[in-house]
Image (cartoon, rainbow, N blue to C red):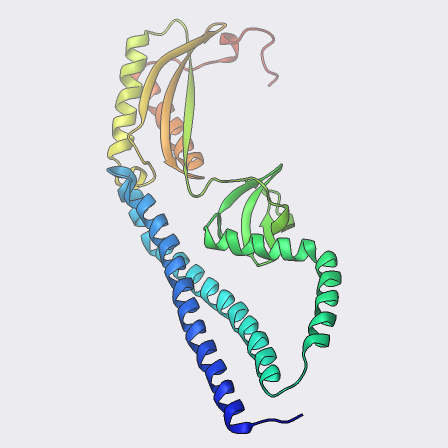
Length: 293
């Protein structure tokens, strides 16, 4: 094997220079891609207006921290993959430059790669799915999501597996490649309809006026107004059920905030009804057997 070292050294230098330039260009493309996805999420948030924008802005620091963490994780992960690929390619090219026949090694690697590929299809699928979940910000740690029949809070998001805790406290490990459809309740909002049963003998106008006053007071409350995306709306008399008339109130708030808001609204309704002399349902108001004491 005759090696002309001056020419070989120059060739190796060119290979290394091209590899460095290629890495720089690809890393720049990766960073631009990540920034683009981050801006897309920010634009979706900026499209909101009025109270929704105010409520979302209150969580802006958390969103920014999450986006920065996601960007750093993706940049580091994709950078490591890129570095590994470039090292392998450069190593083969340098070996070829110094006169070492790499054809047998490539053939062996190809056969081995095919065998490994068949055995690692699910692993590759999980990792690629994890990359795209992070890249597209489908969900993150702390989000409340639905995956098939499973509902819970994301405790950890890895390249291969996502950890989810259900409402009962049980921890589930879900392979990213198995996630075909999911719902993210944290990224959206909740619309809650509160039904207020009132004896049918009560004046509907008095009931609606009282409910409207309650909603206005709740909307003007500094604490509770921060949990609503829009002012509560009294829908009016919705249906009849035996001796009861059902009135409804519509609430729109961030996900998982509706429970506390509903409890506060019902407590205010009881207090206001008592002050206004509006009767609340009693066992005798129901059709059928009265509940046992």
